[in-house]
Length: 379
Image (cartoon, rainbow, N blue to C red; front, side, top):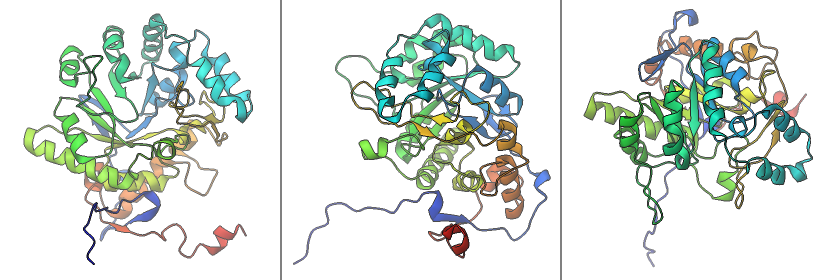
């Protein structure tokens, strides 16, 4: 008996299942250019810090900006709910694991103080770096004018999943075309993982797209909701949307792979998959300067009815400068990320991130274990 086919599944791939093929020529790593452009703004390293309270505060944003990257401050988080967020952050890191979710639900239930939005933006700007801030779609209409008036440089509209078409009986949804017309700064929107959602977002006039649903170390969306696409496949699909949108419009909109990174090799694979930049959370939460004090938690954790995140202890492994530029004190690739990117590019014989998009990649599920018996045994 022939069984009719109901649904066809395609294979999707994560960082540990693929490998980069070296090029036929090589290049000195110091001759590579890893700049990324978002709107009219240029950054010397293609690395963003996630809009998570354990990762980005005013001081961290200033430091990463001075090093050439961009940190995104979460305007829906502790920095705008409390005049003294450091005290709340310390409390979060001290409670037992069994008490963390109720505590997070409590501290994030405090109302956002609109005056703190402008104050935090101005504090970052006064350090001499560009300021990027993140808002949830539900708060965008309310906060966007405040963000623009405070002279922020980039607005990020971010939720677990964002699409152009949102159906609701209770309110008129956020219209990205109207937002782009009303706010005179680049707007990055996320997150998405599909070709169709990505190209529809780009057609609204936004300046960047965040790619990734559920891969973050502190996120449990994939377990709670069953939703997500592994990052290599998600990046490839959204890169195809970016290139198709450029063909139809003449405008290049960068995609930023967000989440799931552990080591330098993961960043390199994301760029080969088509990313223009990457956004890091747990890696940066390990920096001495990170506000999470060696802990990291998902921003969906405080949801009052369906928490989708967990507090994890990531520890403190080194300074932000070590993590980005070395010298590394570890051998597994979580430090000197910029050095890893440049070395991989040199090994592949490419001089820019866009050239990296053309490098060959192979399916290689044994790439992290082949010949590594001594490492795996802990000997």
